[in-house]
Length: 152
Length: 250
Image (cartoon, rainbow over all chains, first blue to last red):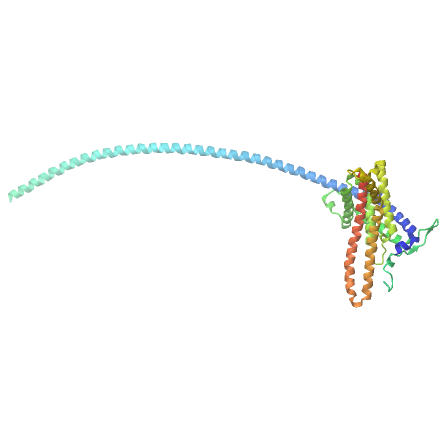
């Protein structure tokens, strides 16, 4: 196995391993890694600031929505108030209208009844006169016939 | 693979440039070459996407490039790994865990390229990394807790008569950490690459029926890439756990 047989190269391998490991470690530690870390943390800060901005905007939107809902509720209650008022008013108006109409109808019924009673009386008296007239004419006719019969 | 070549030949170290320093042979070898490539790749991979990246000033700046997403993925992966195992205090050790993970990960992955060299398949390399972690963690424990660090070997709530038996066991398990850590990585890489080479030998040996081991190799390559990730992850998470132990003892 060359790993254990080539003992003469142990020092060389250790030397170059040390050299390259130290170079790699030093360069990474002092230039590359801090650069990456700074870059990443700057980007994280950017993202975080954006997220906090977003949170602010969400809060703003929520307050706007709450405000809007309050206003909407106000408007709704006002609208229902107006509707109720209008209803009440309309009801009152219609009730008074119904009342006055009923009174009118009652009045007219009374007038009609009076007229009917008057006409009835008139008719009865007319009838009586007519009856009297027809009775006299009938009697005269009857008497005329009797006279003719006697004459025969 | 030429006939009669050992499947272990891929692990051989070949010097590219012979260097001798104060009597030590520190030749630049194929192992060192792939360490160079790995290091350069990691540095480019994680630096380049952020060179052009502007500061995020508007929503349209939020869209990262593809390479940036990949780099961020690696960064956040280690970040969450440390946060889950060590917690907030883990941030200090971020670059150590990050370097270890990426170095091993890309070392493993570049080893999957044909004709390349896997430096993590050498026990001396993984042992050096593991010993580095072990020594760092031990020093960290002593710095944080002083001599109280030795109480780490005493499991709380245990009857006193059990202590003579369990303290040596705890000490041995603590000392075996670098060995298990290094052997796990080394053995996984060694076994995977050897297996691939052995089956690759069958492909040429079986002629037409070599298609069967070829299919197997393709599947095995996928598995090896998974293992490359997994072993880097295991190494990193164990490092995190050891750091956590050193910081919080029990």
